[in-house]
Image (tube, rainbow, N blue to C red; front, side, top):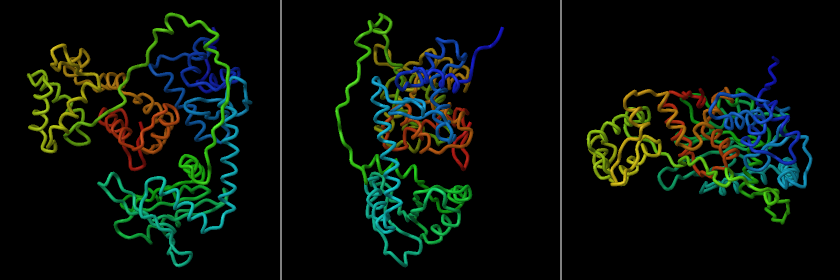
Length: 420
């Protein structure tokens, strides 16, 4: 018997070619399964589809796919449709991005530095100063990045208004590093892109970190921050196809997956989350089974936990993961999954419980698996923003998930980023 199954990307091409509007990964998978185009024993085909399409767009210049709106995909060849306002809007936004890039290249060099200064202010930098036109030793902008008044990162910025065929080389990164002071960090912004040696130099170990923003990312940030662009609102009508369909009882009773969006670490060190979790479960079994008792247990057993408020945050972590619950009397008890976790100490099983209860975990794993190369927190957050509509303003929730996954042995951390 001939196997009629195709790859996820090939299935997506076929489904999207016949679609009248952009589709989400879940919709693509559902249609592909119904037509028998794909077969999967995996528990997260939606996450696999999202990761494969997203990475293909990012890494393949000839990808047939394009992102449209939040979390939806279409084919590049797809034309506007009466059913899809997103395609009309996306076409306009493509034109705006292209025109914005042309305007950046046509600007006076010093005006470009001033524009970057305005962008940095919108991104949260303070004390932004554009240096003099000459004698700046390779430093075009100086700014401070503060994090809620706790830290103050002094940043030196170099901007390069180059055409796309002229990439930034590693010596430019090294030059900026050489011009910086001991307590400063570097940032290079360009309208073009970076060579491989520039990327390597920016992440060189035991040297001052230098962040890089290429032309594509720069345009994204300008549009998001509304620097050099303006937002205009129009009313666009589309046909409400749901109105003309009669939902089934199954559709009416369908609910969201109910996964928890907020996640915290546990005390004991960034490599000890799982060990601490096992200790917490044992403490609950030993009688520390009320909120107050467990708050006191954390403060007694971990020197870094100095306040009841912080301790109370840790109390809720096992519940978020799915290994504890509150009974009708307000007592904390282990769920059946928690009982098995404590009994077996099986990290593979703990991951299955963790990923079932915590939002975006499966998607992160699929993204790292598909990307194949190490990815940093920013790349992971960009993926989640594009595909899961997250609105996290900091890397905290991404970092917590990555650290938990590292502790669970699901991924590993390298100097270049996180990978499977």
